[in-house]
Structures are given as structure tokens and as C-alpha cells.
Amino acid sequence: MVMKNLQELVEKAKNLKKMRVSVAVAQDVPVLKAIDEAYKAGIIDATLVGSQKEMEKIASQENIDLSKYEIVDEPEEENAVRKSVELVHDHHCDLLMKGKVHTSHLLHAVLDKNYNLRTGRTMNHVGVFEVPTYDRLLIITDAAMVIAPTLEQKVDSIYNAQKVAHVIGIDVPKVAVLGAVETVNPSMSATMEAALLAKMSDRKQITGAIVDGPFALDNAVSEEAAKHKGIESPVAGKADVLLVPDIEAGNILYKALVFIANGKLAGTILGARVPIVLTSRADSDETKLYSIALSALVAQE
Image (cartoon, rainbow, N blue to C red; front, side, top):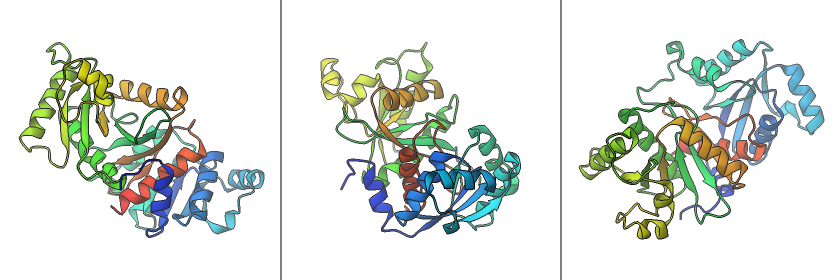
């Protein structure tokens, strides 16, 4: 069955093996609240790396029992980040989670060859959105990591998105490659690459998904809009995955869905040896909980 809402991620994760999460710079209110909820749901155990003094202060305010968790007291941010990544490298932890630290600082450590977390594939962000005005969950990639993806990186993004699609119950996802327009325009590189990806899908150079494009956003998510513009495609108006042209378009769409359309989100970074729970520092503890559940499920997919 295809999931209809993000709470189903939590329910599904409850029935699988409990994972251990390494939290980098854990002294953050939404992060600790999400970890506590995920622990209570039976999804994870956690190793909290960061300032123990600050964690204890938050725990006292939020009524969180820190004795349930392993704590590595490391007040210095850079050292905390490296220690949290090292715990994954040493197989002590199954997942990595961003705490109160800039994404770039965490990923710099992840990409360090000494920690052996690279796989040779592109690492990119995959988000699952639940929007009140939309009738199904929507997967969007990449809104948070790769700035201007190449054609090869977009292929990897499609494969990463497939893993998330499988978790929510979609065996063969329909992938819409987005641009500003639905026609191929040589002066708009996003439309040219979209056409190449569609042809690669036709010729089975990309497998496991139905890929088509270019699509403007309306044609990808609205069957009525696609019909009005005369677009005939198995993906038009029925997209499960939106592949955005660059991080600027993706991030604007991400924030619009959350802050204007009251959408909910689960996000993860895939392409490394383990999933990385990565959300915006402005995201709620609910979003972080869903993201933990998603990452745990992908790790066991």
C-alpha cells in the first residue's frame, strides 16, 4: 500500500530493527525533542555528541530524560562533528543526524576520505512532502545539497529518489524533470537535460522509474493542466518525484510548501554509506521525527 501521510513512516519504522543515531552537535531543542519521540516510538537509540551542559539545560526545560542516551561531551563544534561522523565510520552508529550545526560543516566531515562514508555516487537531499491541498505524498530532489547538478548527478538523484519511493510503497515511481517550461529550448539547459533524461529512461539507461520531461510544475502535478496543454505522458499530472533543475528552484519550492502551503516534510541525504538525517534548522521537531523515521527505513530498505 502507498503511504498517504508522513505519520505512516513512524508506524512502519516501529516494526523494524531499532537503529542507533549519531547526533552531531545535539544541543538543540527540536533535535532533542525529535530524538526523544523517536526513542519512545521504538525506532532508534541515540548517541548525543556535543555540549553535555547545554543538553542538560534543554532536557530540564523540555522534561527529557537524558539517562536513556549515550552522551559524548564535546563542547567544541568541529570536534563534535568529527566525533559523530567517526562513530558511524566505526559502525557504532547506523545513522548520522545533523544537530545545531551548519550543513556545510557536517558534510565537510562526511566527505573526508578518512571516514570512508563515500560510495562513489552523488550525495543529495531527498524530501517527502505532505501538503494539505495535494492528494498524495510528493518526493522532491534536490532542495538542499547539490547546487547545480550535472546530468550524471541528476541520474544519481533519480536512483536515490527511487529508494525513498520504495519506502512509501511506490515500486516504479513516475519522475518529472522540471524546468520553467514544458518544451525543449536550446537556450534553457534544464529543458535540454530533461529531454536527455527522458530518452535515457526510454532506452533503459535509467531503470526502475518512468522518467519524462521537461515539465513546468503545473504539468507535473495537475492532470488538468497537462491535458489543457496537450501533453501526453504517463508522468504528466501524475508525478511521484519532482527532479528540480538546481538548488535554488528546489529550496524555494521546499520552503513554499512548508511555510506557505502548511506542508509537512521528511528529509534525508542519500548517496553516502548511511543515510543522513538532515533538515533545516528552522524545521520543527515533527519534521525531524519524520526525517529520522524515513532515514531508518531507507537504511533497511
